[in-house]
Structure formats: C-alpha cells, structure tokens
Image (cartoon, rainbow over all chains, first blue to last red; front, side, top):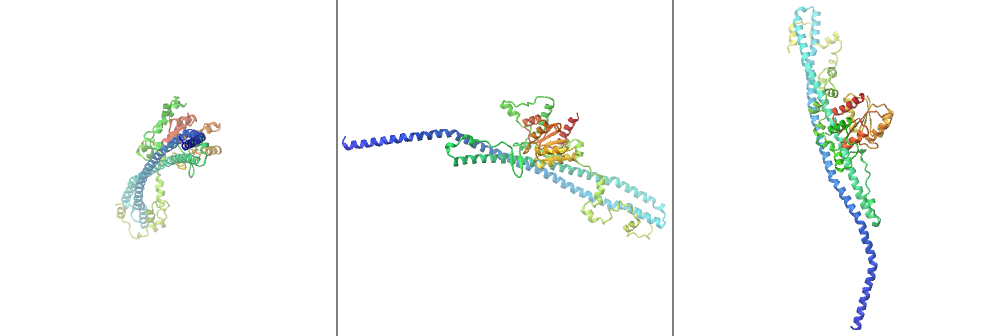
Length: 381
Length: 124
C-alpha cells in the first residue's frame, strides 16, 4: 500500500467517523419520532373508529327520512281520501238543499194559497160546503208529504253531516304525522350536526395545534346528549318517533297490557337488568301500531266499529231540524238565495197580514168565482 | 272539568284540544313545555293534565315528577300522550306516577277511553 492509497483510506475512515457522529445525533430524534408515532397510533385509531361510527349513522338517518316521507305520503293519501268523501257529501248535501227548496216552493206556499182562496170564497159568500171535500183532500196530501219526503231529506242531511264530521276528525288525526315527522327530522338534524361538529373539531385540531399537544380526550369529547334541535322553535324529539307510524303491530295494546299488569301488582321489572340480552328485550318497542288503523282515525269503518256508540255521537253533532229551518230561512245555498224573492221566505213564520196575502197573490183575480177544481188542480202534482 | 294540554307541538295541542271538545270538554288551557305548564297550574284551577313527553325546557316526565312532588297538585290526574313506546319508557312513566299512557298517533276513541279510565279509577 503506497502513501496515496493510505491517505485515501484515512479519508474514508474519517468520513465513516463523521457518519457515525451524525448517526449518534440523529438517532435520538428518530427515536422521538418513533415514540410520537407510537403515542399517536391509538388516537388515530380512535379517530378512525369515531369517523366510521359517525358515517354509519348516515344510512340510518337516510332510512329514517325515507320512512318520514313514506308516512307523510300515507297520511296525505288518507287526508285526500277523506276530502274526496267530503266533496261527494257536500255535493249530495247541495242536491238535498235544492230538493228542500223545490219542496218549499211546491208545497209550503200551497197552504197560504188555500187560505187566500178560502178568504176570497168567504168574501164572495160562496158555498163553502162545496169545497170542503177538496180542502180535506188537499190537507191530507200536505200531511203525507210532510211526514215522508221532508223526513227522508232531513235524515239524509243528518247522516251527511255526521259523515263529514267523521271525515274531518279523521283528517285531524292524520295530521299527527306532522308532529312525528318534525321529531324525526329534528333527530336527523341533531345527528348531522353532531357528526359535522366532531369532524370539524378533528380537522381544526390537526390544522392549528402542535401534534404533540393533541389528546384523545379532546378529540373524542361527546356532544351533549340532549334530544333537542333548534329550528324555527326548539323541537324536542324521540329519535325513534317514526317507528310509531311505520311499525307493524299495535303499540297501544302492548302498553295497555303492561299498565294492566302493573295495576294488578305484577312485577314488570321496574329495576333495570344487567343482562344485556334482557336489557335489549326490555328496550324493545311494544308492538308497533297498524298504520292503517292509525291513520283511519274516526273516519274508517273499523274505527267506527271500535268506537262505543256514545263516543261517536259525541264526536258527531246531530243536526237539528231547526237548523234546516234556519238554513232555509237565510236562503241556504247561493242558488236558493238567488231564486227566492226577497222577503218571501222570512214571511213564512210571521203572522199573515191580509195585505201581505193580497200582495203575494197579486196575480189572483178577486172577481173570479172560486172553483173547487182549482184546489184539486193545485194538489194534483 | 278543565284540561291542561301540554305539548311543544302546536299541531298536537290543536289535535288534542279538538278531540276533547268533540267529547264535550270545552274548558281547555294549554302550555308548550313543562315549566309553562307548572306556571299555568299555579295560576288557574285545572282538573286534568294531558302531557307530551319530549319537550324542551322541561319534559313531560319531569313535569309529572314535579306535580307529584307538590302537595297541592300531587293527586292531579295525568295522562301521558307520546311517541315513546319502549318498555323502559312505560316503566319510567309508571315510576313517575302517570295515571295512564297513550301512544301517538292515537285515535279519538282511544284518547276518550283512557281519560274515562283515569276518571273512573279516581271515582273508585
């Protein structure tokens, strides 16, 4: 080995020594990095779990919103069915009104006309004996018409009004879906805000804070578990509210059984149980109600069957025949108001003034003799 | 008979009040949460409380407990009307001493039946 080669060897050895010196200085730093990574690993795992858990809630929320939409569609369909029935019934009611008006026009004025004819006959000194059979026949026909046609129309109107009341009640009950939807939307909103806040906090911490100062507890802090969402008003919610509509059993019956058992002094496990399976069973919803029954309200046949007779009658106010009188006194429907000459209807209940009769029958020729056939003709319809 | 209807949902309050009126009970007052209900109870005579469970400020369960803890109102009949139907909910309600429990959505006959049941039990 010559001198040149020896210098090169020494130089390499010197470089190697420098490398070892550098290594000695770097190793503690690398060790710190390893320790830091080791420390941060569980936290990253927890963040990962937290994000995954929160993300898992999204499909659940989506499913609940889907159920809300379904429940709203069902309730809307129920309401529209009830409204369709109401429209049919008001059409029928209007037709009955017309019949009553025709009846009034056709029949109710005839007694007045009879009186007017009698008055004229007396004035003229006609032989009243002659027209008595015709009068008796006319009175009999009037009695028959009163006791049949009017009663039928009144009964029909009463049943229509009862039916409209049932439908209105069913509509009112179907609108409970609004409260349940609001609760469920509030629950989903609460969940979305919780996820958003958690992700926001993680991002902010990673961006602005010295990593060494990150603590799992600060990142994993839970949102306050208060079931209230702030919309236009604070809405307190039951996160499972939608189950009350979309279930497939009868929740009320389950609850009634439980209340009955409690009232009978039976043990209904008032103390929470430790066993997880039992606890899960305890937390099971009582059998969910039948959707159809829920939204049928008082309007469905089933609901009517279930309701005690007294209750139905309390819900549906019976129409009073006086109401019909009042209705027609004020003109009833628009058609009636248009067709009835002013003052004529209100005069029915007032004492008859001979001048009024004269005015009413201004077209009747006082000078003509009374013919019994006129009376018969009048009631022959 | 005067009713106090407590629910944070104005829709539900109207539905319950409408049903009560259809049963012939026209004297009804209302509150949007438990705290408001307690104020109402202190300011006017009420014979029957119908309350929701989930409400802001003070829940129906807290209201029930507050009523039962008050010597003046502890015998006041309380009917819980709520969406909550878990067995643990019913147990909590029973512990708080509600008189009866109706799950939403309800039908008028069910509401009437429960009110009558509470009133009947009180007469005994």
